[in-house]
Length: 108
Length: 113
Image (tube, rainbow over all chains, first blue to last red; front, side, top):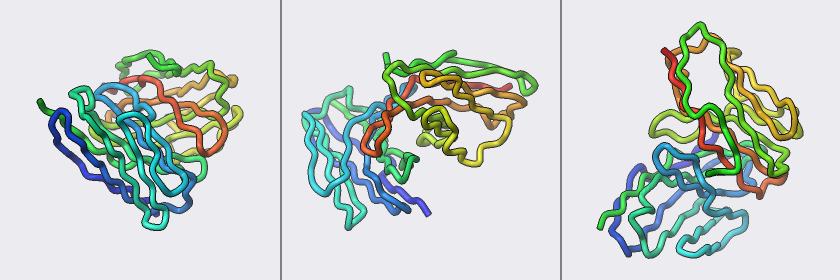
């Protein structure tokens, strides 16, 4: 079966650092994607990991451990506009399987 | 604005109506997707087209009928929908290759009366 777990909700304050974890058990693995989705808008691509290790992109970093079936998205210097849903998605074959998403609320 | 364009943005239809959702991309992507997203839930894959051929149908009811007229266009024909089909319908496209991200359109918000 396919199972992707992430926390439902997280809160943080402006300027802080937050880590959103994702664990997965899927039949097949061709990479892990993180997307950001603001309410009422399309998901937008943030990062991609297929090999173990850390990928850094500005304020956002993503980490993958394939042996542990584990990834995290690290957001630094949080801004109010980072309040959104963060979706972890595993590519298994052609299909992209999404986790339920983590709603991040950033307060001042 | 996204590079994947979906029309209409909103659609209200009765259970006996026939309507179509349209999706267009001009990025040269050869894979196109339809997803359904309910409120506070992740997108659920419905269909995948690869090189204009249907490659995945995730056991979607026949009242949803996809069509890919050419490499830039993807349609979703709707007929005899149920109230539970009310959702945000997202189109996405990607280049071929498993490391390529999918680019999503803004979606069509569909309400079935």
